[in-house]
Image (cartoon, rainbow, N blue to C red; front, side):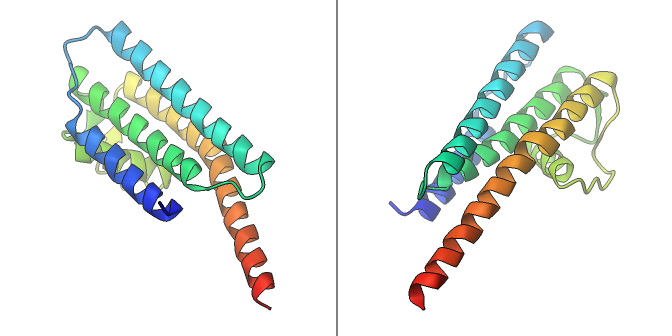
Length: 161
């Protein structure tokens, strides 16, 4: 299976899982916090692992790193969604999973349209963590991904001459 197809298929599967996964809002705050931390640690570990593979293994496939980046956005989106429903008033206008995905992507892109935003202290704390995660982990991973793509394009172009 071609790497781009794997990335597209994996992304579609993650997004479908995100929209289909049942969320039990009745769980205690402690359970939600622990699950969110476990998810964030797992996604961080996966991204760091994929970055190491890219840096240390010549010719490694890039789709795993791309999929890990998608997973990070989905993880924060789900966290935002759960907070919005568990603690109404923490977010303004975050009512659906699509709203949460939209918010996670606008936060990642640092666009901040202002229509959906964190209002409560819990939501603002999570968004602060998300911003730092985006700046440190995702920026590093994206830099490695772009560098690998550039190197491969240069290598292919040199091979054709």
